[in-house]
Structure formats: C-alpha cells, structure tokens
Image 1 (cartoon, rainbow, N blue to C red):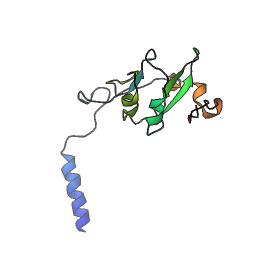
Image 2: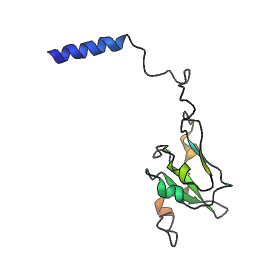
Image 3: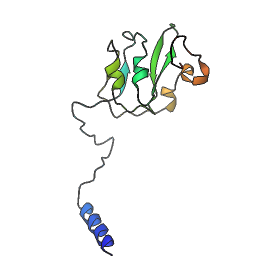
Image 4: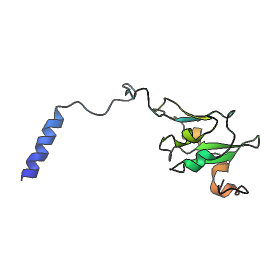
Length: 132
C-alpha cells in the first residue's frame, strides 16, 4: 500500500512541474557552445588514410570509391554516436564537428548510401584489414 502512495505522490509532484520536452520546431533547446553536432568531411583535405574507420567504436564509417578513383569516408547516421573519435584521429583535419544537432530530412532517399558501401559490392583492399 505504501508503494501506491509513493507513486501517487510522485505523480502529483510532477503534475505541477514544467515539462522536460519542447515543442519542436517552434521551441529550440540551447545546447551550449561545446556541443558535438553532425560530422562533415572536407574532401580536399582527405588523404584516405582510413584512421577514422579504424577508431570508430560504432563501426559507422565505411570508405567508398568515388568517380575520381579515391576512397572517401561515408558515415552511417543510424549507427553514429557522435563521439568524435574520428575527428580526433584525422591527421589532416578533414573531419570536423558542426554545431547542427537538429537535422531533418524530407526525403529519406537524400542520404542513401552509395552502392560501394554495401559489403557485397566491394572486394578487400590488398594489404589492409578493411573489408571496404
């Protein structure tokens, strides 16, 4: 019986508090200056060293082949935990965090993975442990 009274007391207390959620997009949260947002790649600085892929704890980065014959990192946003290890490991500063944390897409095909990012579509690179 005392458990029910405690539950009721918590419910009454929370009834008069401000809600934790915001009415997005009308209201926005202030995340501060040190927020780690989405990651962008400056392809002119990328040397395709694959260090970002090696340090990613979520295995969210896979390299894919572009038309110019160079491999670039592709980020699977469904797996990425925005930890920033890839940004720290990048020797040229090609990968950088943005301050954007609230991104919406109207069309799901906008950020579809290239065909080369599928494991069955590529063969291993000689001399490396990478599958892509």
